[in-house]
Image (spheres, helix red, strand yellow):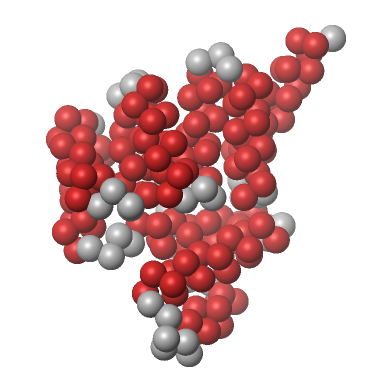
Length: 191
């Protein structure tokens, strides 16, 4: 559910992307999966938060690519409707996205975000679960889950969810802050 600004492709990551061009036997899906694996490995190793944010943004760009111009168009329309707070319209588009392409994790994640904005935590959690079933490393969906758990008073579960985020994206500052606050709060309750 976390939305990061689009950033330019980092120079130091160009060789990784070029490696796939040299593997003509790979399908587009295999190239995309290999690229995501490389990016997640880099994200886990990166100790500079600015560079980590750039890598996370590259991951999000990969996630947003549905492989279907129709789906991409509907995702754009949904994003515009969400920005304008026209939630019922955005929901119509996102319902169509997940129906037409049920294996597209970002469609489920975007709908989870919309449900969250509409304060429908039950539906948001259901869509987060579907997102994570399709992409278990989706740090945005995990962060959304953690936020819902925290908002509903399930602090131990929220802390565990933030720890899952940090296992994938160790330099996510907001997750670090939230996990620290929850850990301190829970430690204070135990004493």
